[in-house]
Length: 265
Image (cartoon, rainbow, N blue to C red; front, side):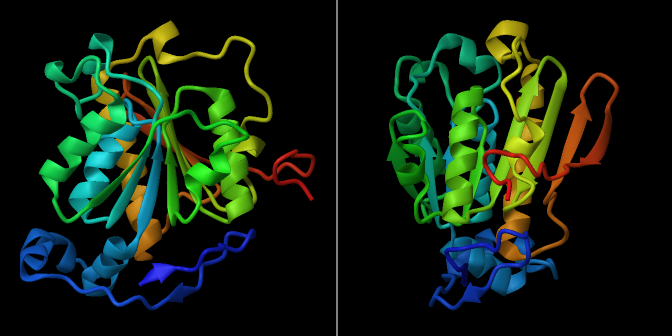
């Protein structure tokens, strides 16, 4: 099973349609621990196999998320990133190895993901998400995970997800702090960040503890699995904020902005 192309703007549950998806004997063994979960089971695992997830930014957040998505059995992953692997990436981007330095991130990550799970199809898109390209980059996807370190790219991805009716899982991190939110229609990501902060903190500017990237990336993957499988209560319209130094987390509600230029009515 897979979701219909358009998710309602009010965040209501999507309408599923049936697609003939079966699990091989090897896949049944591979996903046995998922199949034992009442919230996933055979139906949820087939939904995962039928799904296509776009991952924008295959770095500190997107890389660990991609590993978890591949391990979970998502049928198709679309990797979107314009960059090459640098030595400074290796402190937190565990999907890469030293021999990958200088290679396109989407190519190096694709090799790692296929080695992890050969049942997953990997699509590679080399280029940034911009207002001109984002909609084409994200078309025909069921869920989008945004782990970019650029506010303009995040704004373009948010607008494209709204236009396409695709749920957005957004993950960000810096220093010792991380956050994850899910946006389906209103409120959208732009309601949370209406303007780019004048002193926007990026990992390159303020630093980040490496292990935090895995935490945030895995939380993004967890939310995507919940959305696809129809399990539990996703963070729709909420933001989970994690403080790595204190080991504490809190969840806050995101309020829709009536004047939001992206989703306002």
